[in-house]
Length: 579
View 1: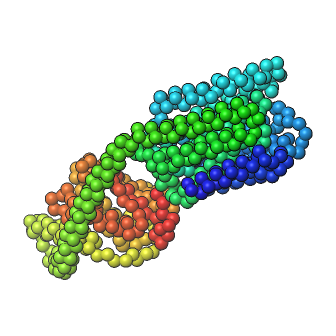
View 2: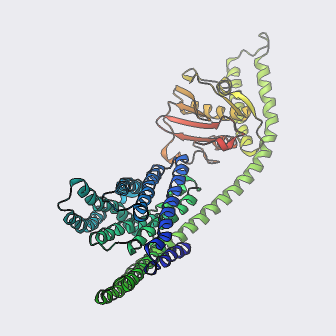
């Protein structure tokens, strides 16, 4: 802000030498000022357009349009200066007028595209106010231009009328943006852009009347208006380029906010407006004293300048006073909201710490217990298998004994499964990576499960090779398959879809069951949460840990019940993993 004000004041002071030098001498100031400012502006616009295009940002098209319009400004300024200082005569319309007019539609499109995120938030009253204010600029300008062009050919008359018409249309989105800025909030660079276009519209109106009454000359006060526009836009684009280095979602948040706030308009907008208006009044006073010869006109202009300055101060004081109580109330509400947010954050963190400590204790205890349980379970399992594998002449033939052996085997399997779930959750072993076929890995998991006759499992023909820990993924697939089978006790279908999204492998486990209740969808991957009477509540939590260890994600949805596993094709390249 300080650098901007210093730049504006500096160019203003430089322009005050105009009453003391002739046209040829002043050209050494005006020519570089206009050409360099439009050239720098064009460069920033092109740089930003390319940068945002690479980011696929919605504003990239807008900045490409602005860059073309800025090129037209540069060409028009160059032709205008050539007519003023090199070529003889000053025809109307000239080639410069064509380029000036061609820039208007591009700048209008730039404003509307940039305003796209907030257009739905703009009320009808704001649009009516903006259009009414633009019409207030338009009517006297069109009337004066038409009266001056009476008797002229159609083409020059059309060019003369096109200036106020296009200028008024350009002002409409700028006013809408300013109204939104005053109510909601926006980035400092966006404020500079809007102020720049408002000043440009005012400059067009002043220039038109100066041209019509024949008082315009190189170095006229209105020339500074256009330079102010170019300088504001250059600073705005410089800031926007810095913002473009931030991730796209945060960029959007930095330009428009849904929270009511006044930082931008009060901290920057009011001081900037005050500074520009003060400089304009000083310029007008200098112009009146040194360039006007009529003493009466000079005195009137001085009085008008003083009155205008007092009016500006009064308007600013009234505006601040009007909004002060509202601003204090907003600040108080924001502080209360922040306090409540901090309290909630502290509560959440406290619960997480307690839960983490509880899980740590459970994990340590469970780790010891399951380790001691594995050995007797293995002995029991082996004994049952050996009994069943005895020769026919020594095999137990009593049906009741065989049924009890089956029950023992199932109980052992259930206990072993729960032990495995606890171990998978507790131990944090590193990944042992290898390249495997994802389809073969799923088929291998299916082969390890006792599938009831009334359940059909279909797996897609699609296959992908991924780099992963196949043992850990096997545990995940087994858990998901067992859960799916348990979700359809009356029989049904389980479908496993395999697909690829750029550098990702996507596996969908779909069952024909009733699905997870809406209340449990968000809790289902939490440790110790279970809907089963005999479950540990660690199975899906372990699956989530394993998938996240692979830099992947796991999620669930209903209709139909679907568990989706997304894995990078190469877990060693997490930077390429983008959903």
